Length: 297
Image (tube, rainbow, N blue to C red; front, side, top):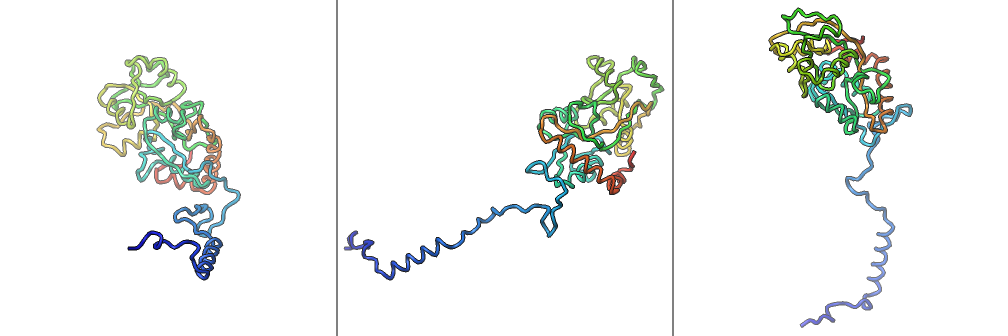
């Protein structure tokens, strides 16, 4: 039988050669360089990857993730369906302009009223396709993303004529919740928004198609909409009518407008403007517009 005292070698019985070897190994281990953990390498700066040299004059990304989220309901060709092959020239311009500063753009769709609300509260960085009157407290860049011409549309069999705001008195005006159309129309909507016989308010992510249906059914009389948006929708849908353009009432630039709740909105606004100027100077702005059948106003 082997006893415990015989099985364990007391430290004092370790031979001198073995002790010297052990001490040397410990010394070598303490002096050797430590290995870097796998998968925890420091990320490369995108500006220096693939042998490229960092441009010292280019603004650095304004946030750690370098992603700006913009939102709107589809308003094609200005901004279209998120994730589609053609997301709209205003979205394309935003992507190209921010890319010059190393920032990516995430574009999402939701109702216009919700996009304004989410941006105002700071849950989203910006809305795309905004007039100043849409969100006067937002942060607007110096450079517009596009240009809008607002017209009034009716059923094709209607002979109604626009003769100023008074001519809407016996008409049902149809509008989209949260939209701004013109100072005059906006004031009229605000006065009569609680009277559905005077103002019919539509909501949702695709209100334009619903508006055309209601014009066709005679359930509304007059609908204000951007001329290019209405033309694009008719060309790319199967509606049985082509709404009649009764009048052109307003023209205005539109913008990507940034959240008033985010501290970096002024910087993002400036970077976007700088990028748009560079796109115009290089001719890239016109190239982006061309596939949509548009040119700079």
